[in-house]
Length: 296
Image (cartoon, rainbow, N blue to C red; front, side, top):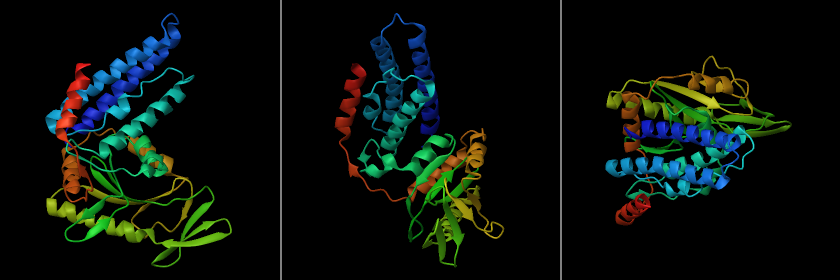
């Protein structure tokens, strides 16, 4: 927890820089074959992740790196944006594999997560100095509460409820318990998202108080494509829809603050009270796999 974020950011940056240089070089030097570039890139990827694998072994952490390594980049992409999209796709899959495994345990990851547009948006749009907990189940102190989304920044914690909609969707208040989701002429009642939002913020504030950690707690309702037609004055929350969600993204991206110790401390305290469903994996087999891979 305390060393991985910095390692991940550095290796991701180095790999993208290397990939970009190799891709540009494939156009500048036509005398070299595509196969040579693929071989060079594969060695670069393997070298970078052998470093990460060694660190995991020392820190008793393990992520399934093979899924990311076994697909060498092929320089068949005609433009840099196309290359970047492919890079982000594989990076996203690697993040999911890491998040669902340790050196001793592995969780069965729902296939839906690989195609979840909200999770993909969060991981690919927000900077690495923000940590994401996606629908965690928190046991604190005696109650079990299923959260929506937590975004943990260097000095602040966002409690987020995401509202799925389309470009025509409008969300409006209806009663204390229900809101209305309007899609053209169609209306549907949904549970008031503030019930979940307030429940999350209450638990988070209590954990902060009990651990004597000082961080600002913020609340936000988010819909990437629809509109939230609600009076914001009384709510104490941010309303982010297609009119301003991009500005919110940019604000977080422009936060150049490094990962802080208070952020790591709170993240660890929160993970300690999160429910985990996993099965044991054979550490001997995993270690053997690491050694064999490193010897090639």
